[in-house]
Amino acid sequence: MISVSDLCVNFETPSEVVEVLKGLDFSVEEGAASAVVGPSGSGKTTLLNVLGALLPPTSGSVVIGGEDIAKMNEKEAARFRNQELGFVFQQHHLLPQLTVMENVLTPRLAGGWSESEDETRKRASELLERVGLGQRLNHRPGELSGGEKQRAAVARALINQPRVVLADEPTGALDGESGTKVADLLLEIQKENGVTLVVVTHDLSLAERVGGVFDLGK
Ligand SMILES: Nc1ncnc2c1ncn2[C@@H]1O[C@H](COP(=O)(O)OP(=O)(O)OP(=O)(O)O)[C@@H](O)[C@H]1O
Ligand SMILES: [Mg+2]
Image (tube, rainbow, N blue to C red; front, side):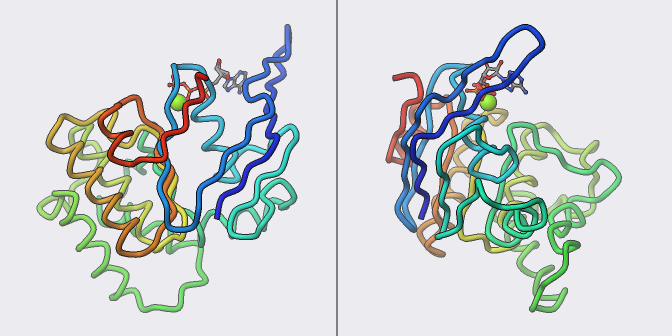
């Protein structure tokens, strides 16, 4: 499903070129899960951004579901992100003026949906229930705790029933119990829906649960 070969990512700053990923090979089979670990600054978020078609690689090939990310134009990348991918960012990026429910429904705004809005709302409620936010549907992000925001962001990433879910430290801001809830949800969705899952984490117990551990520090 995901096949990355000889991936290089450089960042050009005014004073130097920072080589973050140097000839990386990484793959995940369809429906499988992989945990990406490594020290801070080793390039975990960078790798996830490349997989999510948010950052064009400097060189190398990145194929997801038969599509070469590196060759997509803006429009193709936008469609791919909306319809094939669920992305949980390291910062939650919820829109402050919208309620929790409205935030979860935002991926719909891009259009191209075959189901009715009622069906999507029902799934949104179920997802929010599963992350423990059933009582918070009409709250705004400013009225949520850090962990609740992160859980809402996970529900938003899953609303499109994506084939691939990329999550950057999804439990980083959560305590043990809510972290477990989010991890449970991601792993259940992976198994139930055959989703291909990549989770970046510092949490070694989560990495072991996810399996397929890929260490960028080595
Ligand atoms: N836009 C950029 N310009 C220059 N350097 C960058 C840029 N983005 C990231 N870097 C550098 O690339 C390296 C990898 O960054 P990245 O965010 O991928 O690390 P990470 O493994 O996710 O770290 P953390 O665990 O702290 O989130 C860092 O040293 C960072 O300073
Ligand atoms: Mg990071």
